[in-house]
Image (tube, rainbow, N blue to C red):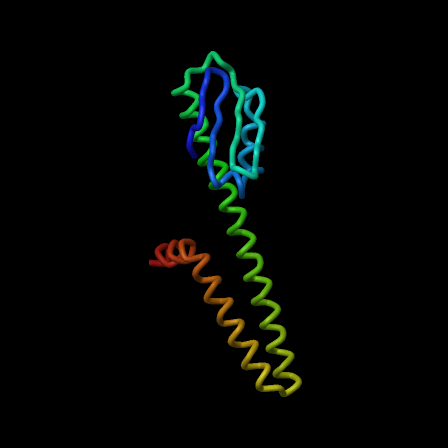
Length: 140
């Protein structure tokens, strides 16, 4: 996040994050009483914020940086949840397909789906590494 211009009551911020995760940031800004209005330009990653001019530049920058971190973490967590959902669905589908392949006596497909399942399970471990480590430490 980089402040491009500032005059009391108006600040323009530019960041590449605004090109991708702009909705979560503007949602947080809209909920706040300090901010009067904000105009987003996703094409260039720019956000023009109009705020209460009685607040100093330093206080407002501090306030915005806290909101920025919250919005960024919220968007990042949402993306992680999407990835987890896709991995879980993929594992269930490949496990089911592998079982069907065993039932129909198609060893080649059983092995193929098994390898895909293992790849998805490895992805699941990588995505959930922090939680798995915490669970292991709690068992000790």
